[in-house]
Image (tube, rainbow, N blue to C red; front, side):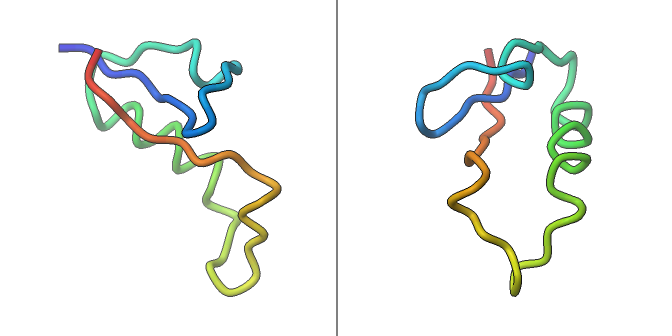
Length: 55
């Protein structure tokens, strides 16, 4: 089973072009992107919303 990361706005980027062998690898990729964000000071309009899906 493979996993992909999609953007809620439907756009493509270097993150959505990747395919992962397992969910954990996809999660780790997103974690690297969002690890510096804190919920209280995050401006979510500046970053796209990503979701992990089975492909």
